[in-house]
Structures are given as C-alpha cells and as structure tokens.
Length: 305
Image 1: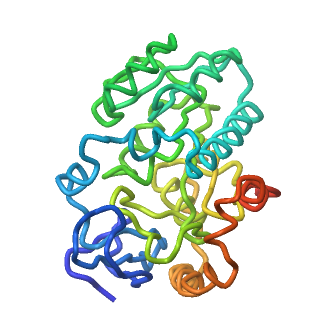
Image 2: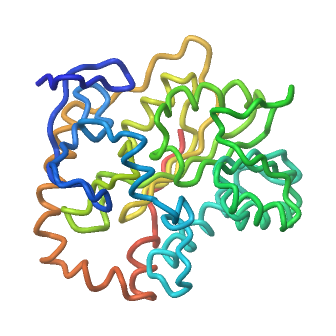
C-alpha cells in the first residue's frame, strides 16, 4: 500500500509495514513504522527521522557513545570486535597488500591501523572530530569530515571499506555512486551492515533512532546495482551481521532480481522473532561471551557471484 510521503531510494512509493513501535533511544513517544519497499524490500523508518532528533538523542556522546562505548566489558563492544576481526580477514583475503584503501567511518582507527601495519596504504574519513584526532594520533591519514562533504583527490582506490556506516546515512545510494567513481577498475568495496532478516535484539528494539535503513542481502544487492556496482562475495552470519564485497558491474548489466515476496518474508521473520527471541532464550545466550561468539559468527553462509 502507499503511505503519505513515503518514497524508497529505488523510487518505489508502495511498501509493506513490517514493524511498528517507538524507536529505541529516541526519547520520542510517538510510534514509527518500519516499511519494507514493495520493489526492493529495503526497510526504512516512517516518518523519516529528522536530523535534529538524532542529534538530540546522541547528545554529548556523539557517535563514540553509540559505536565505541567506554565500558571495555560491554557485550556489544565484544561482538563488534569479533565482527571487525572477521571483516579485516575478509579484506585481506580478497585484496592483498599493499593495496590503497579508503576507510569510510574509520572511528578511532582500530581497523585502519591494523591494515596499515599489514602493509596497506590507508586513508581514513571520520566526521567525529575527537575520534578522528585519536586515529590521527595513531599515525593514520584521516580527514575529519563526512564522506559526502569530502573533496577527494584525483586518484582511485583499490579498496573502500564501510563497516556499520551505510545504515546511518541519509542518502546511501548517492554515497555508493560516489564510491563507484573513486574505485579502481578492479577495485573492491567492502560493506558490513546489520541484517534485518536475522535480528539479534528483541522485537521492540529492532528499529533504532540512529539507523535510517535496514538491509538484507536482496535489498543491498539491488541498491548496489542502482549504483553501478555488483556483489562479488556475500557472507551471511547466523545473527545480525551481513558482509558483502562488491566491484564494478558489467556494462549494460541488468539490475539484480529481488526474490518475489521478500518484503513479506521480512515481515514474517520479524513477527516470529517477537516470540522466538524469548522461546530460544536469546536474551540470555547472546550475552554469554563464548557461546555468543560461536552462535553469532560460526560457519557463515558464503556465496560467490
């Protein structure tokens, strides 16, 4: 059905409601809808979150408070560290050093620093000034700005990294098109995003204020196609994490086919997750370090195109 003011990145104006409730961490009492596009199944929050609402929710914490919690024993931090290590191994397996790499959303430079130490030529972009300063203190070349505002040099990168960045951006399709213009002919784009088809948190916390978009393999592949890119490798983990390696699409290539009924499949999965989260005691074992790592990241489904 059509929702007033709704328009997906692919241009579709029809959608299916897959979730409804207040946004986690927003402080906004009204309910929002999670809408899955009828064409590409990309899920977004409706009505769209305003920039001022997001800024107010983040407050003085900024993005550091969201993705770099100060508590070193945070369960979320440990999970992200495990995913980051798997992401680093994926980069090194698909793109050997001394390749040139652009790391979008470099944070404090943990990933970029390890890649540099492994022999890569790394340039970082980080909009949070404090985090960019910490990355620079590691000896990294970091531009303290957003990728959208960054004026790139006349060069091409062999690799571009976006780990847990795309879901936060206001215009991810335009960002992907800009990345394509910076990618060497045989270059690779490495993306990591949460997978809406395999949520890890409770139903009421599935949609969050700071996430504008919710991807699955089908919707991400379609968005890459709209930007002139194509998946090369896809890794789907048991919960939450989706990692994709992409390159330039062939000239004249058709857009990737989206499985019929994908939006309804997402709705069904989220509805089942509403009670499976408790029936499977997921709220307990996802916080147990050894068990969590095994269940989250062991034996991902890998597809090569």
